[in-house]
Image (tube, rainbow, N blue to C red; front, side, top):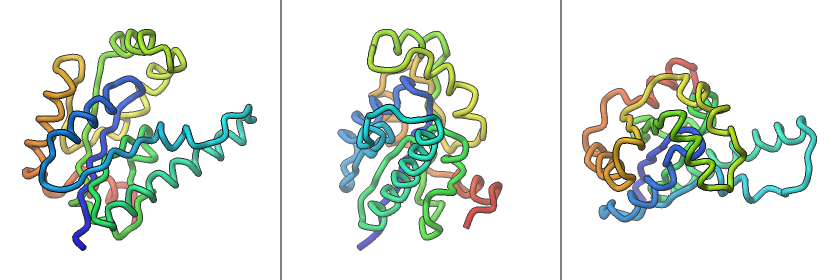
Length: 185
């Protein structure tokens, strides 16, 4: 079985990652793709009140499980897409060394702070200020294969751009460069 390709969309809360993923799933017709979401993994955790230490430890385990699941689906021939949200997660230290960096497309999903705040208010299902809190951290690593601004085009247009870019991934990929930068094996 041929392993699948991974499309990571990285952006703050409310930046449009999930909207792009839904559109992308409908556009990709050369195999089976799946959308894996960190939010879905977080929703699997117990929702009881936790101390800060318990919460931080649980969040680390959840993200580790998420990234291992992405790698496992890839090895099984699926083409997962996920959205890590922190520099540390994006540094590729969670995907096992058997995931070839050339199989990972890293997409930066950007949106102006004012628009993120408007979207958070409109959604009503997110902690107010979460996107602002993540804003400076999420893209701190500064390296992507492709970037898009969801305030200037529809999720469909952004998904089409990703689809059209897939056959033209750069060498080395951003994932390769991040692995080298952080000496991850």
